[in-house]
Image (tube, rainbow, N blue to C red; front, side, top):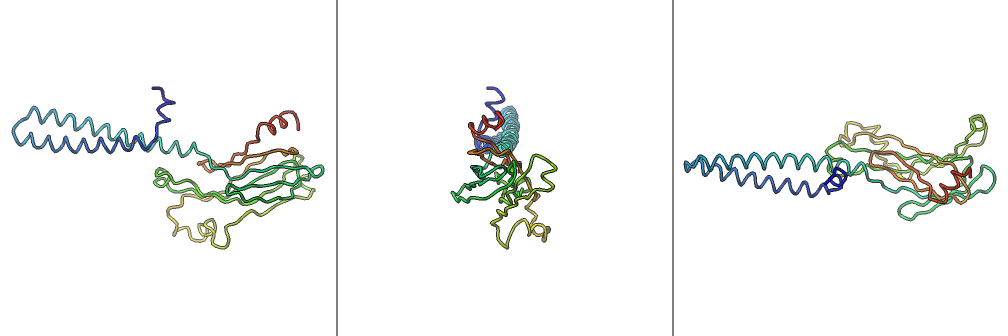
Length: 227
């Protein structure tokens, strides 16, 4: 079995194995003690060796399970939006944004590219190892011009996507940092891609907190061909 196959093993199985090995360790500890009291030194020594072996394997399985679970979490992606672009005129678009729950809205956008931003909340390490994913909320959608000079003078589009309401974890963390010790950090993450007419873009959030945007195959081909 190579390392790639090892990393594909479910962390839960390793943690279950660690539990079984720990039970075996306890069982051999009880047996070792009983044989030592009975004066069976050789048998007790043999049980002690098995105890050390199973305890070492339990530690390795626990460490491997936690480490693997951490890497699994970092490798997962959460879809946050799908966008379809329709050109109305040069540098003016209608973007249909669909959230994972199926909610859809059509938004006007000026520019050559779209930029989508989100607020990300990451937890402290014990919660991460337990499998708690980072939280996010979409924050804003804006247009981006390729030409810096045009970006200074042209009309920009900034659309508020925040649905958090008045009681927002992001604001609470800033106002009362000492009362949310389980929160590791709150930060913004953004991603942008060029727009093409009929382009389809899938945006996901990685467990590291980074947003990634991927055009579908047809859109990618058009982007490579210069639109």
